[in-house]
Length: 164
Image (tube, rainbow, N blue to C red; front, side, top):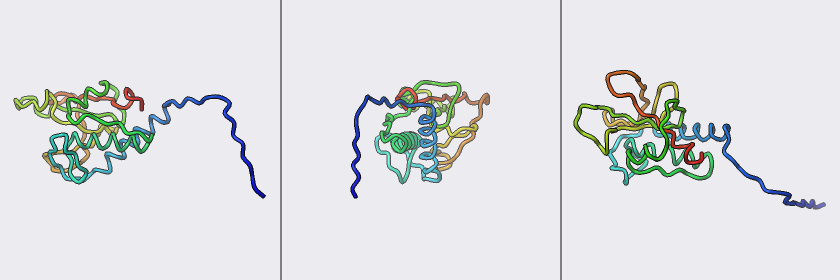
């Protein structure tokens, strides 16, 4: 005996990003960043991002793209450069997991790589970030210290302003 299913369209459905989906996207971004823990560091100059070795900007690009793509089916493409990435979102004083974090790691070095900021990573919560660290030579967790001798980091939400 065969079954017949009849479908009728009775209206339209609008899909919106609600708090539950947004939390899922953020978790997915953090998980994507975690997948790179231990990956060797390699300065990539932005446009040559690989997956076997990454720098801080590439880590952000991979984590945001992979995380948003896995959670929603559409990936968010970040700018190649740190200064471009910071301008793709909005600054926040209340960071959430999945936000990006930007540092000026040595304000007295006289070197301004693309501007005043010279390092970035993915905020994972609990005052921790995941970043590709040139000093240690691999992707690792970093503890975030506020109010120390270095300037406080800048937190940027790139997900909400871009519809995630």
